[in-house]
Structures are given as structure tokens and as C-alpha cells.
Length: 572
Image (cartoon, rainbow, N blue to C red):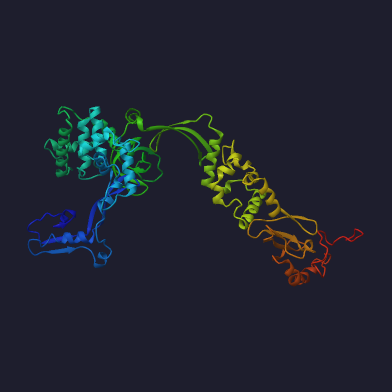
């Protein structure tokens, strides 16, 4: 016996003396992120391996060969993950609704179902019409529950019966519940097409098994289709119309209706955007590649674009004819990165698919301005016209916030979070990032302050400082924690201590410059510099600048912005 999950059942088969266990299993895994279930190959758990081993020697002596190393066994899980945690919960939720227990959280499950999977199931049931907006079971949902089929297939069958396509729906449901009836996939055979599989099912129903068809799978699918036709009362004379296979699959998988999109991936098949918002791609060379719309009945959950395994073409006219309730009109005023401007459009949407797009006449200026703010959030505040004045104002406000947290936060994160408050009124009437270059950014930032705070800002974080020489020098707030005042040494004479701003708590960092405006000292201790550093600087520079004023007591000397201070007679 080659051990598979079948060998883990309680069935006892006589004559089994050898079990060969590869240590793998194929299990369906549901992804709430995509709403898709895929078969995944995973390692078996230790308890499952023990169950498989027990198939040998149950009735007579036997041996089990395990095809893995002992060190691998130490990494194997001890027990399988409960199916509740990995399954598609839409069938369970529909059944609970039919029982009147529409809130699974109130039930004492051994393993509570994951919230994300429950939310995905509830969303699907509402989309299929099984639930209303309040989460209550609809009459259509009750009929779906009575079919015993997966909610997707139940919805497809009931809708198809209304349209007179019950026979085709029963065949599609049987195919989707069974393993693939074709022995191989790929462009050289039937690829992902539905029609060849329908043909294989019908051949099996007539007692014929064509080449390339899994006989057992085809016979089971044919028997199931016949059973469903009897259950739904499909007339025997009804002939399936394969041209509407895509429509019926669209009823079952409205979230997987896909619109073709342009792809630049070399050698890749046609790529589609699905109504759920995910990407999907056909195999290279697929005959469906030219179709503008398809519906994907089976796909995997790997990579950015899931690989489509089974699909049919979907006629765009079916949206308005059969899915009108899921189509919505919306206004879109959004920034387009390619053009750098705001585009105002009216969109007709089916899920994530834009079926129609027209220009929106006369959008509101505030809508456009808000779209520009979204662009700033994406592109960053460096797209704004940060003039010297605006940068200084921001630095002044930041400096005072370090001393008093009640001042507005002007960090990038805080400004982005409050764009509507301080920037929106100034961006009204602008349509592109280029237009924002006309902004008076300093005035916009000032809007964060009331009149009293503006006056306090001027007092505690002034733009300029008046030196003893009379010069008015701008303060550099590039580093709000250490504002810089850069001045020539001779203009600081007579200043005995380091100037302080910010409620008397923030000393200015003095960049003391030579007559040639080159830094000779950086200090926050001017008194210490006069006492200890000045004479070394004087010794070094006096020979280069002999005409300049070099007093012996700089703390009491007369400051000057000229070569030498003026005398009483007005001479230097």
C-alpha cells in the first residue's frame, strides 16, 4: 500500500504487509485573503504517520517504510491542523443560517472558526443573494441550503433553472465537484477550457471514454450530473447550450469574473484583473487569451497573479443583463501619477473592474484639492515649495514644541495626518502637483497657530537676533534642538553671555566667523570662549587681518560690523 490520506481511514484491507509512506499529503487550504481554496502539498503530522503505519500488520505481521530522515521527523507537526481553521466556511455559515444559528461565535466549537474566514464567507453569501445586508437568510438562501451543494454551485443551479439552463448547470456542478476529468492540461490539449470537459462528461454518460480522459472521474461526474438533473427536475429533452457556460460560472464565481489587462511580462500568458481585486493569468498559448472577459472557475493562490486552471469566456453584455444589482456608479476624483494631475471621472464598476469610464463635468474644487492631498501622502511633503521662510517657520515651531508639547507637532508624520486642516484651504483651485508650487507654504503652516501663539512665537523663537553691532542676523532652525546664530567675531564684542531664546531655556549655538566669514569656533558658552579661546583665535587671525579690531577685553569692547568701530569723531 502506498500511504495516502486514504490509508488514515478506519478501513481495514486484508493482505497488507507493507506500507510505503512518502510523508506528504494533499489538502485543500482556503485563503481568506483571496477567497480561494487550493490544494497544497504539506508534510504529514506525526499522529497521521502513526495511523498510516498501522495499516501494515493489522491482520498479520508487516513493515512500514518511511521516506524521510529522522531529523526531518523532529520538524514534523505533532497533529494535523483542525479543518475548521483552514476550510472555506461559506457552506457552514449557510447551513447555520438555515438552522437559525446565524452567529457562529455563539456556538461552542472545539476550535472557533477564524474571524477572517467567517467575514469572507458572509461577504460571499451576501454577494450570492443568500443573505441580506443585515446578515439574515433570504428565501433564495434557504433554497440554496436545501440543494446540499456548495453555496456557489447552489446559486448557479437555481439561477440557471430560472433561465432554462438547468441541464448545463448540473453538468458544470458535477465537473466542479469532481477531480479534473482530463488526463492532461496545457495548450497542446484542452488547456483551461470548460467545453472539452463537458464533452468528456457527456461521452462518459453515453458509455464512451475518449482518449485523454480519466475514466473513473468522468463516470463519477456523469453520474452526479444525472443525479442533479433528477433532483432539480430538469426535463430530459433539455439540451445544454455551452455558449452560456461562462454566464453560469459567473453566477457561481462573480468575484472571479476577470477583465483583461495589459502585461509587460515577457513570455507570459494573458493577464486579467478579477472582480475581487486579485490578478490572474492564463497559461501561455491559451485559446482564451484573446477574450476581453473571462470567468475563472479554478485557480491557485500563488504569486501576484494566480494561475488560472479552468475558465470560460464571459460576454460583457451579461453584466447589465444578469448582474445589474452588483454594478455601481461612482465618482472618482483622484491624482494620476503618470500625468501628475488630478483626473475627474465617472466610473461604472463591477467589483474591482471598471466597465466604463467617462469624464466628470465640473468636479468640486475641494474634491480636486483633497485628491492632491492624497498625492502628497503618496509622494511625500518634499513636493511642496519649501522656501527658506517656510523651513524657518517650521523649525521655530518645532523648537518650541521641544520645550512645550502643547505647540503643534510639525513633523512629517503629523503634518501628513493633518493635511486637511492646514493645507486644504490653501490648495483649493489647484489641479496638479505643479500648481502646488504656487502655495504660500509659510502662510499655510501659520494657520496652525492662533493670534496669541503667533505673538508668542515671535517672542520666544524670533526669526532674527540683533547683535551688539546693530546687525540683524537670521537664526537657522534647521536643527530645532540647537538653533544656530552665525556672526563675525567683531560683531559679538560686548556680549558677555550666550544669547538664549525659548522661555530662557534654549541657548543659541554660536558659529563665530572670521572677517572672511569662515567659522573659527562653534560654542554655546560665549563667556568661556572669551576667557579661553578668543586669544588663540586672535593670535592666529590678527596677522591675516591686521586692520581689524582685536581688543584685549572682548566682553566689554565695542562691537562693529565694519573693519574697526567708529570713534566719537566718526572715524574708524
